[in-house]
Image 1 (tube, each protein chain N blue to C red):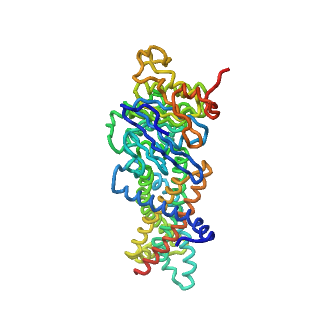
Image 2 (image 1 turned 120 degrees about the horizontal axis):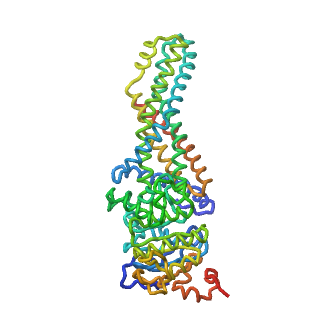
Image 3 (image 1 turned 90 degrees about the horizontal axis):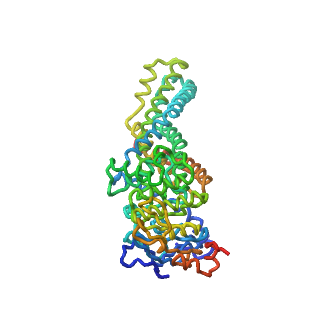
Length: 262
Length: 283
């Protein structure tokens, strides 16, 4: 497959950088995951990151979750009213939130908040030689910086999604009760009965997968930072854009799998 | 170039064998060879971009050479995987150009870092504080333990960097431009601390610098343990250390090549135009 002409060589050169980046990402991911099974484990760092990623994201996740529920209920009630089925709004809110919007919206918020934070923190460490210092002092930066962030995000993101789903359903209930005039029993029974085992599994599996994407993409761009403070800004932007895009790509793939399973 | 230093009979701590490294088209290191043993002081002079820092990073295995071999504390590190090098690196102290301190943790935590984060030879926690306090007292910054690096001046950060480099009492300490960007008084203070470390612990030192004065101080002064002062190495040496400061080896680098390796006298006697630029001439 070696190109013989100049044009072919040019094409290969053009591909060299993205292919090398993908390879580097897989190497980083592989090493971060392998570190799960060998010491030392930096438990303090994991706890610190769980606080920063999980507890720190809680207010924005609650707010977004609540208003997502509110908006979905208002829009769906209007559509269902044409068929005289506004009583079914709880069902639509719960399925939409648990299957898709809860995981995706929460992941996007965490990507915006934490992938950027991780990339800028690690990027700053890179350009100020702190990563080299860490390596020189006999510490594996992947073990010390990447693996704790990956573990913390994998634990906290599904929990945040559960909270976002619950608060979203509550937001839907507020509209259903006060604006549409449904009873509490009508709304909650409808919402609860609509959910199947498959919905709950995909609603929790998705954030678990997104957590790896967000944390590893953030770390990847942070550790590749070069070019001073401007490079840190660029790494931060790339981390948010790439992790957000991959959240959408992966949710499409997972949804396809779960739709086929059903 | 052959290893000209006299390491016969002493334990070899760092050895380069025909090490070459390129960054794309740029030659960073060009067949560099040298060896340094226990207690030796080696000063590497060179202009910006001459390969000094690259050499130091290659010595630590932070960068792998294209060809040649590197031995650190008696073990070959060329071609080793990253995780195989951590234990070897933890036996070496290093001061980075800007100090390389971790800015999100306190000074005490920075200095304790090599002790609490190493993968082997764990130091008991009760010993850590004692060693950290001792290392900070050595650089006269014991009062800054709870402060963060951003609260200290450039010179103080460099001193904390020295404390972190020596806290685990390594046999070899590498200094990357320890006086870069500092005023002459602070620069002299930093070099005096490095000489004090060398002479009180008998460590080997590899110092990368652009300033001839740094090497001059290392080659002509020794720390007197009795008086606690730096004194001229030409004196009687009472209270001094085992090795002679005047045995300090100078290496001059240009475009990745070693263009001179020898004593201070050989450096000063050189007629090479590039080398002469580093040595102040007195008319």
